[in-house]
Image (cartoon, rainbow, N blue to C red):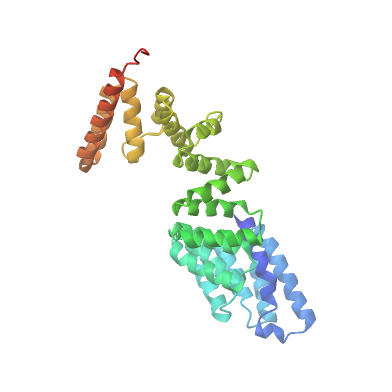
Length: 329
């Protein structure tokens, strides 16, 4: 985590050093010295040598009394030490000196991520982007915050902008796909997901998403082809594969998968109905009724619609059993 964030902030770190009004009045050799000190601080942050980071902050402050960098360095040190309140205070001091100081804006956003306040985090990520629109990492975190805050239209837009800045930033592409799916733009999402699968991009993450999109589009045979050969499946992948087996008439295989993840406390309506249908098709009507009773015990309001669905499933099974293939005339 520390290494990644330091690398992210290095995109803008040096650029900010030469933008302070106070530093503009410094001698060229002093500017270069501050640049060297900032570079050193980056390595020390990665190495968790925080006392030395503090010493560098003091040195920079002695050379430039109106620089945000010492406060930023102390904020970063506190952030990596898990002292979020102190980090917030230091970073706010840096921003007070220089409101457009994008490393401080970004890291303050990360403080709010740690506090699980994605609304506030997003405001600081956006400010960081506005002051350093060349930084793909800032924009990616903005896209993530927008997605979490359910602003899916803007999330996919920011993810697309991230990819223009860094075309191999495949995690941003995943956010774009997820956002498109939430916007019911399944064809666009499926196209991008298929492209990632074909190019082996972020395969472990995209396979599950791709399976969900295929199942949503009714491409059940393709889901089975994609997931049935995997040695290990995530819960999401099991769900997509179970639904696909059921739709393709392979209720035994579907039931074996449903058993691995169904839980009355958290099952969606689609999973509950699918599981009950598998049980009925496999001749386990009493087990289906017990499962239904466990759901109703937790969610009494579901009694009528769920009983109605169970009745429909049984009726469909019975009608299917009564059908006979006639001899040709």
